[in-house]
Length: 396
Image 1 (tube, rainbow, N blue to C red):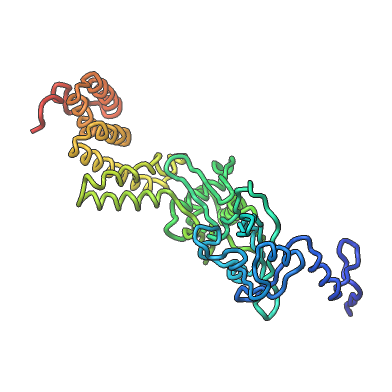
Image 2 (image 1 turned 180 degrees about the vertical axis):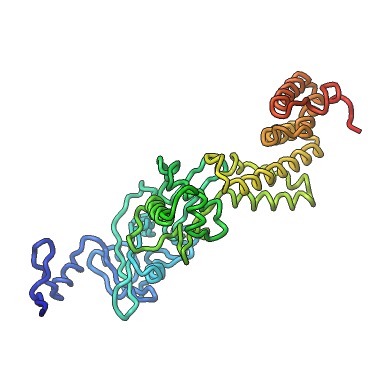
């Protein structure tokens, strides 16, 4: 059966649209905001009336003008530091989000909102739009230039920070959030659908794979609500029946904590006093146990124990350094925090009590001893291996 070919003008909301060249030129010329067409190397090849007024107001030349000269591309300490908007538009292949720029002119900085998009065709060209902004508007909307970034705090309560603000909601405590936390725990590798199903839904049957794919889709919607239906996810990638967290776009505080504390521990072996500040700064990142809101998840325990042990090593080293420097108050604070992380470690608690005695705080030492004794009796059925009188005697 032959298919009828539709002829006649294209319709937009029921109205006939004329695509004549004269209409297009008139629309370009009379557009209320500045429009410029740029060549692939950023040179202005065409500009409408409003754009020419803007160029004249900025006292810029009408010939040989480039987007870099107009917008201040690549200038240090600006929103386009080291970047050219023409190159960004051509590399992205799509319309860029708006960007706030300040254009220098004789009467002072002129705030403009600018966006760019590549033009279809054999020649590499870009169309640029500038519209006036407000000097009091401090937004830049430039987070997209560094690529999508998701910051996740896992040490303590899980907190998500996206470029546009925090991601919150009950979903973080539900299946979708549990899937995200599992991917965080396994962030160093890709995990198969079967592994995810077995870890999160061990009681599920053959339908587990369908559940995993459904919740991966739901997770992507939560993390990237503006992502197009066919646009690949920047945060959760797929391949060969597996999923992984895209670490190039996702920053996890546990990784920063581990890297900084490991470096500080290495430095402290050579210079304990000099590295004490680095140890304190790294330990400040440890806000609690890894994924503390899932205390019984078996798949999180290995990472939790590793980071817990690393924090304890850092606190021991910090306490030793402060003691060597005769900074008893800071040493006490480090040991108090270590005692919280190691509630049954008698040696840690004894060192803390000995510091109390050395500084004349005998009542504090007795109180700490009573708390430790109750804890050990309740859990293990025995008293500490030392008594309060032992605290005042030097160890053999």
